[in-house]
Length: 325
Ligand code: HEC
Ligand code: HEC
Image (tube, rainbow, N blue to C red; front, side):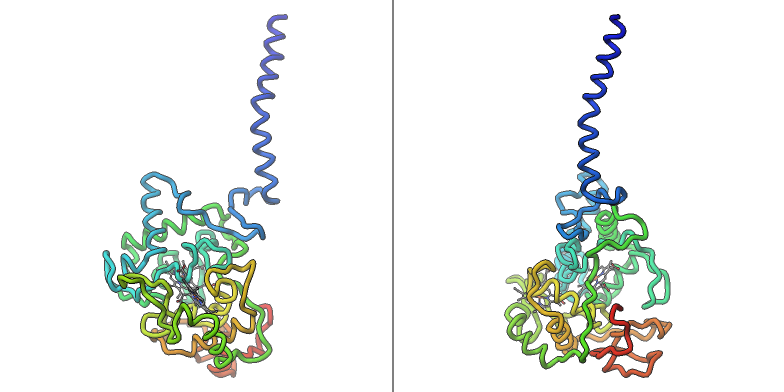
């Protein structure tokens, strides 16, 4: 009898102690329909959104991740023209284009990098590691001389990007990562129309001359340059109209996001056409896109596998492309 009671009691205790676990399990499952994605942070429209700096672990691994975060946010402080580690870049920060340290939905974030790299990329015609992709943006977007992929800095940025994307299942591209593909226009993008919008919507921060504005001590940009000697090169992703237009639409004028945009799609294409018609540093693209058939529709440099010229590739209308590119 006494033994029976203990058993019942024991079972009761067991039930009670299980209760909180089942509640946690239930709320855990109701966050997302797919159980493999339970720990991915999503915004109200189910777009991936990156973890904040405060979530970086406080251990030795966390130290490197935190340095990577710091480098993405304040690249110029360490590697810019007055940098404390090396003076090799144009003074831009990674975050100028990878907003909120690469965590913002449709803000050119790093959500799908850890899950999709190493990745075959047509631009180089080879399988690229994350390190290669980081040094690529250093050279093409930050116009960096000799960036060492074995340096502490590249390793730290890689550790940060891997940490940001660690919950994304291998091979998966999450919603809201990178830059949105905007619907195409039926006409060519028009730099003249873009200029008029630029002067009313953008020049107050980026300057009439596109040169941006540095802070009072001249270390970092408050408003980064959009063209001129310190801007991204002709070999950068932003030099393709679709990348620049998609970025502008969902993120500019700063600090809007994709939930409430101010620029229409056609305005974004025209702005991109204006900005990418201005002078900027050149880049040796002679070994890019070894297979010319794989060139993106808006890649502005020939030779092409089709009969359309550089101007039509750069500005459109991209009549030969499936509208859902
Ligand atoms: C001038 C803007 C600009 C700057 C500055 C910049 N990037 Fe990028 N980055 C891009 C664009 C554009 C892409 C391609 C996005 C696309 O095609 O969807 C890209 C892509 C990447 C990717 C691959 C993303 C993916 O999902 O495949 C990584 C990684 C990356 N950049 C790292 C960096 C790092 C690290 C820095 C700083 C050293 C940096 N970038 C600075 C514009 C920039
Ligand atoms: C209120 C000031 C402000 C306005 C207005 C503004 N921007 Fe920006 N823009 C910024 C800031 C700040 C950043 C960098 C964000 C960061 O580092 O977090 C930025 C970044 C950019 C970038 C990527 C970095 C680069 O320099 O290449 C582009 C492209 C851009 N803006 C285009 C535009 C366009 C086009 C407009 C007009 C529709 C516009 N911006 C209006 C403040 C502004």
